[in-house]
Length: 267
Image 1 (tube, one colour):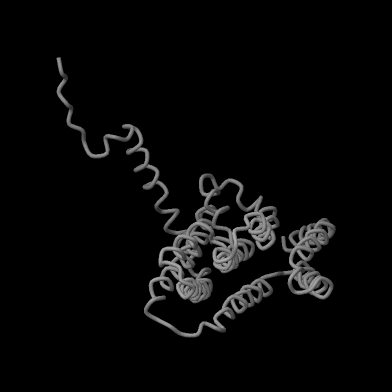
Image 2 (image 1 turned 135 degrees about the vertical axis):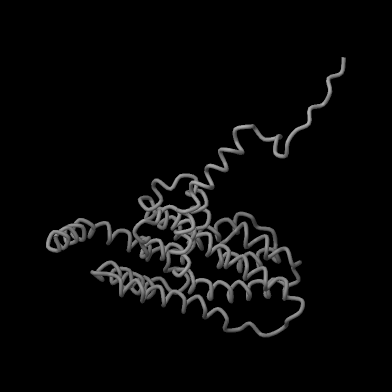
C-alpha cells in the first residue's frame, strides 16, 4: 500500500537540529560581531580607497585586453592576490607554461610564508574563522593585524575576521566596478598604481607612531635596503624577508627582555 506523502515545513530538508542551532549561533554571536565590525571598519578605510582605485584599474585593464566582464570578478574572488592577478592577465594571453606560472606565483607570493609564521599566535583560538583569515591574508590585512588591537570588550577573532572580510570586499568590489565599466569608460590608467605605495606609506607611518621601540622597523628597513642594493629591484624581496627573519630571531630575546623591563617599570 502506498504511503501518503507527508507535508514538510520549509527547511525540513535539513536535519531538524541544524536550524535551531544556527539560530542560536547567530543570535549568540550577533552582539560580538556587531561590536567587532564597528571597531574594525575605521582601520580599513585607507585600504578601501586604495583597493577601490586599484581594483577599478585592474578591471579596466582586463576588459581592455579583451577578457569578458566575469573574468576579473571571478579572479578577484578566487585568487585575491593583487599583484599576481595583474600578472595572470599576461599569462593567460601567452603560451601555456604551467610550471613557469607556478614558480612565478610562488616567487611573487612567497612573502606569505613569513606572514603565516608571524600570524601563528594571532590566529590561535579563532575557530572556523581561521580558514577565511588564511585565505583572505594580504599585505594590508597583515599590517593591520600586526599593529591594531581590538578595543576592550571586543572579541579578537571577530575583529580580525571583519578586517579581512572588509579588505576582501573592497578589492572584489573595485574589480567588479572596473569590469562592468570597462566597456563604457576608456581612459589612460597610467599612474593609478601609485595608490598601493601610498597606502603602504600611510600604514608604515601609523605603525611607526604606535611603536614604543623602533628597532624591528629599522631592522626591516635596513635589511630591505641592503638586499635591494645587492640583488636588484627584481630579486631582493625573498633575501630581504630571510634577512629580516634571521635578524629578528637573533634579536628576539633582547627585545622581549626590554619589553618585560618596561612593563615592570610601568607597574
